[in-house]
Amino acid sequence: MPEPRQHTLRAIDAREAGLIAVLLVLAAVGWVFTAERMSGMDMGGWTDPGLLDFFLTTWVVMLAAMMFPSVAPMVTAYAKISRRRRETGRYAPRGSTALFVAGYLVSWTAFGLVAYALYEAVAQLVPGAFAAEPGGRYAAAGVILAAAVYQLTPAKNVCLTKCRTPLDFILHRMRTGYRGALRMGMEHGAWCVGCCWALMAALFALGVMSVGWMALVGAFIAVEKMLPWKRLANRSVSAALVLIAVGIALMPGATPGMPM
Image (cartoon, rainbow, N blue to C red; front, top):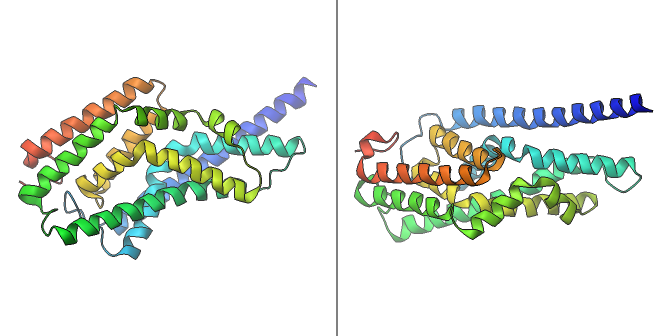
């Protein structure tokens, strides 16, 4: 009996490793696609996101590049529980993991559309609001500073806790079937939006078409979701945002992508 049991555990580990590998490959493809699509478009803070169809395509691929590494523990936990449900004869259709991921992207896509609409509305109502000098630079610093403050709020703490405890989230919200998988993915995506919306707003201020800033914000998200020291990671990201905001406000020439 012990040998089959060990074989089963090794097989499960291999499947989980395979799923993580798929997510990382998709993230890598997203980085390559995004870098090519944004080539020559990094114009510093408040980069114009372009037409809606261009922005939407770029946004979804960018999400995969930035978020898939940090969401991998949640996806693998969902896949593991679904597999165990099938092994015990309970309903858990194959392919539901893909719908779980799709639901996650749906929530973030909705946030992207709202952010795009707000950007366009402000740009039309206040012409020059996002110009580099002088207002745009200070507006960018203000948004980034607000993101740093949000890091320290109870709302951020609650959302971050949900993102860092995949088994707790899935066991308390398990829904069966394809519709249930999609809904669970959307719920997890909503918690992730609640956790990271301020960081993504900071990315708009820094330059949403900048691969460099995109990589830095993606690293911030991964650090606070995956490192074991939750409080330290969260406070470190907040401190880094404060430094960036001060640099943009007082020393724009020393801040990558920010004009003098």
